[in-house]
Length: 355
Image 1 (cartoon, one colour):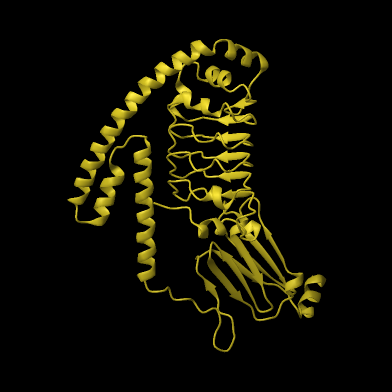
Image 2 (spheres, rainbow, N blue to C red):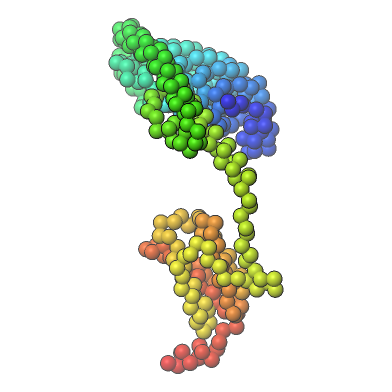
């Protein structure tokens, strides 16, 4: 289980010179965090807290964040809304793609008078009959629900029909709670059987293949197990990389300082020697993002790095790097490098002009 440590918080607060006591915004997304802790004690001035794409199963330890305005806990394992009554300044709450089935738990937000935006898209509760009417009637302070603006007439109708809609919601969420309890038992049995099956397989690759090919349900327990397997896979890869011998670095220059010709990416190219310039045409992949290409023009060589693969070509005469140009075709994606010679062959130029 990944914990929220002081080291992690300081690492994510570089924009505030690693000072966490005065931090107003922090992003702790995609860290496999399972429990919210310590933040309310270390960062009491927080206004924006981003915790999306983790494994958080419960909203807790946030009641001291009196200035918190925006809380994003999308794509987690949350099953009910709770423990946000102390967040007095909360104006936007994003609970997208969680597992909230207890819709009546939104009643705990009635005291959050500054709450204006609530997002519950992707939760089981959004499929309940009269879901939207119930939430709008329960939380009249909202301006929008699921990124859709609430109109005055919609709010009035929702308030008028709230008792009836609440009864329907309570019945539906009771049915869903029963299904969820059955799912917990079923998933626990499936995980136990899968663990026994994988334990009987000696080959590690086959064991991983058996896990990833097994059928699974969409539930918090499976999400947590998948994240654990991903984490173990990363650790195995890092361990293997650490044990592998370091890759031999290619020498780009001879001992005397002469640049080598090199084409690691095996890219097709054409190099022309003209009277007053060199012309290099490098057939870069058409759909490759230009940000992945780096061109370094020196007096006696040109180096092009394409996706960390080096292309280097040396030339006999010195060129003027400042007057050289680099262009890329919008049609083919090819790279065109024009290198102006420092001492052009004037006789060749004169002969060409006369012709």
